[in-house]
Length: 130
Image 1 (cartoon, rainbow, N blue to C red):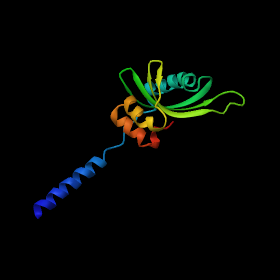
Image 2 (image 1 turned 90 degrees about the horizontal axis):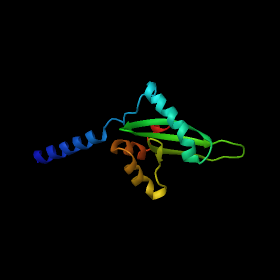
Image 3 (image 1 turned 30 degrees about the vertical axis):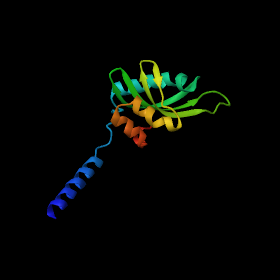
């Protein structure tokens, strides 16, 4: 009987330890290189995401090799134009990848981002937004 309680206790501790993983570490927005990359992406993304002029606010989520991962909130510029988008993106040089819509969203996010970052994006962590 005691052995069964010890096993259940061990399982409970393991489950709780798995649930208490620290949040995904975001880059320091005060760092010069992070600010520079956010500015580069804010300049690049309007044409890619809006197919025209506009402005983007960007939150750099991380980098891996030559890839940058970010969340962009972009709005079209111009009179009478009212379109916008808020989306996570992967940028490889000047090539921008954004996730699919609807049921394609989760699997495409998992393909675009490293595992822990993908899970944070899918969990809709508010820290990810610009």
